Length: 522
Image (cartoon, rainbow, N blue to C red; front, top):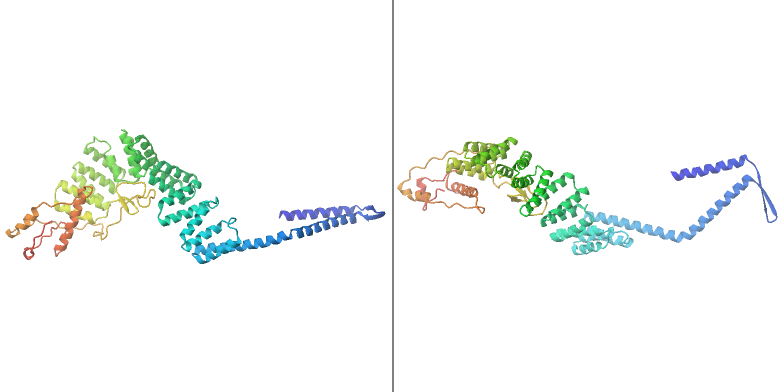
């Protein structure tokens, strides 16, 4: 547009000039070689313009002839380059579509038409064609050659990283990712892999610096960065609890500030604060976390914050938690546990049953069984509750990649992913027997009739002590649950009628006489 305006301006100026000369007539006298030439001023001006135009045309012709070899060679070079880029484009499309044969063909064609030093994409297409052909060794060699080129270095590191991941060599993969992250921290794949390596080594400070770099480059959102920092600071606090309590306290408080609803951060921060005799501040931290999301670890630390408190004081503290989060199963469970310790069985039973109504799960039934055993000692009802616990949904736990852990961990033991553990119910048992939320009514078991003399062997077996299985961690509840399961299986095989959870499986006398061997009550 500007050139057009400039051309029109020049034409307009020439027109004005010729018009000005036409309005002012005059003559021009030229003497040359003894001759005199007299012309009007207008003719002289036209002649001068014609001479200038002729000179310009002659100069353009001479220049065109002089540059014609270069022009012709450039034409063929541009045509060759266009054909090469067309082959390169077709090869990249073929590689993306998985056509290894066509990708290899177009790679060779593009390499002939374009210099690989001028177009690095030829090296990428060559490596991709090798991968499609199954030549992984050749592809790795091509990726390694890319490391010498500053423009292709990140691409080579990415290819070597993916090949190491394919082979399952996590150390090599993290090595290449670390080199890439040092050059370009904005690369997500490099930063994530490096972060996993740092957390696996326990280098929490290095991981925090990397997360800060990700945040500054806007690779991750602010909320995600704060969550990761909270997780890393919590892990750092756990690692420094014994060696440097002050540094652990600082890290834990910062983690709790970044994520007030993160239970592990709140628990360790409150624990470290309480250890330094600041119970009020620790209680405030736990109360804020409990309001956001109740957790049994919070309730345990909150009720036992003061070592010298009586059991009634602990019950009152559990009730305070219940006031902060009403109509929640964890609140009722916390009060029930504290009431059981205080031997307030009525309150404990009422709260445990309320927890079952809100969230029917294994731990509530086990707690109710403990209450029943402590208050009445009725083993029939205890076994009935244990049977329900076996069939009830499992309690929430820290779960990551199929691994169930009693304690929170910053990274997954399977994949090494940061913040993989979540507080949720693990996968349900296969073959759930109780699917509805209503409990199965079980009739009470009457006492057995007096044994006949022929049944003395039965009495002896019944009075013999039963050896209970003991779990690996010494938990008696697990042993009782296992005993209830074996009892249910035995009674189910030995009776004709549907077995009851508390039914010892006693057969009639006629069947006992027919059987060559005795049987056990439980």
